[in-house]
Image 1 (cartoon, rainbow, N blue to C red):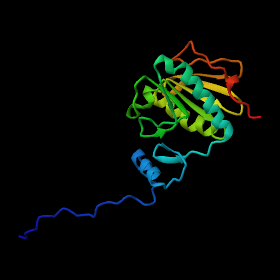
Image 2: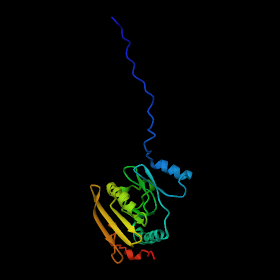
Image 3: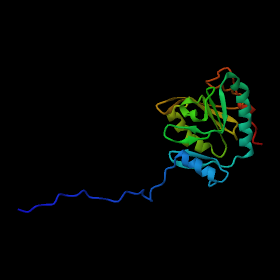
Image 4: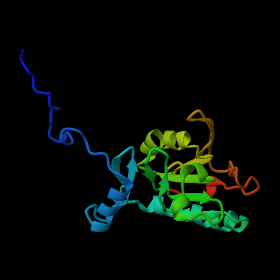
Length: 200
């Protein structure tokens, strides 16, 4: 009779991340990179673990944001809504975007700026219009944002996206100069894209 020694569990060295796989960042890591100066002066957004550096804004983009900012502060802030300028908005999948302007219920803190609480997000686009439309707008719909305005600075037009259903916008409408648009959170306060500055 042969006695067999009890088998011992196989020991393996701890697994290490595959260096060939891309690293998926967290917002805390992005904030640390910004604080360290590793990203220079650029603002950064995080979309599904990937860091996107926001391009330098041209004069037209800045002027459009200023016009919209003044309109929001004059028309929506008096209603008790919180108007935020280029502040991070957190999405359920861990992504963090920085829309040009956002509107939240009164008293919303930075920690509470979740996409599903937003009354209105505004993205002003010139060179970034395709990226905003194809990359960010679907994620806003999936996150349950009630309304997003995509402002085309060169065209002086606002495309309104509302009422997401199953991760897709159920209402999309483009407004040009002379075609006033009122946000769902303030239906009696209309904005005319004619107020946007001309590219000329």
